[in-house]
Length: 161
Length: 200
Image (cartoon, rainbow over the protein chains, first blue to last red):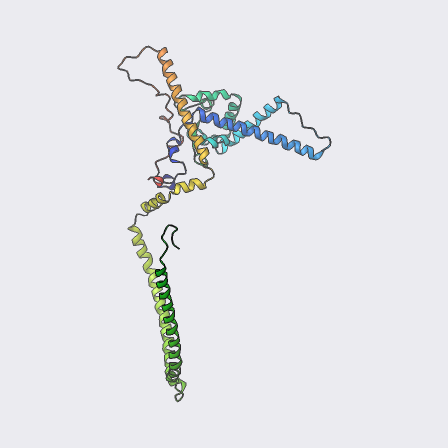
């Protein structure tokens, strides 16, 4: 018997759910957390760039103009890159980590980088597709159905199998 | 030190105890002085017996005793060496025999269950959440289940409207589609087994 079979760091009340398909509430919460994380990162970058410009020319410093369209496009781009890297490496973004979720392929393995990129683009541009995961046996969103991925409860640290 | 709620000892008891300690100290001092006096008297006699001045050093009892002590020391070293060699052969065999008769796995499981090793690991692992995050996750799971049940009921209701009324003999299919558990496909990660480490 391996040690994994005897010692688990997953709390007792969460063990029955490990490996099951996650539903709408947790996935929406995770997505919200990711969106906020990227927004905060962008804001920090904006402040950092302006601080650097202030150091270069304190007298003539003015805050750089941030157009809503450009800001939105940058936010989407960063979000897509962030989700792609997160899902293709550990299978979980920060939001997924907070909510105890993991994105895996239909076979329970780590998603490939191209699939992760396509899923990130799909999620960023068509977030309403997530609503489909409210029902159904596998709780699949539109993105999951198209790309054959799944989102499961997985509180364990480390890489997907 | 007495526990805070213990009654204080009586004054007579303290007096008797102090008297006993004083008597012991007096007796020890007397014995020490007597011993020094005896040694002072006996020592010259011992020196004369062991090293009589009329004999050459070779025939003195002290020389004989020193030789005897050397032989005894060498013998002791040899006995220690032989004993060590015997233990080197004996201990592994005995240990193996003992270990083969002990169920180490169940013993370890008992120890782990006693100290709740899983909880210790859980607390020392940063990746697993604090109580707050754990609560948020569990509430999320509860929300998922509630939404899944609601969607399942809606599906059943709309399904009944669109299809003819089933005969009473047909088994109801309510909520069959809303079950969150994995189906016949290979589940991505198997559910956690009930672990022995935290069984109580």
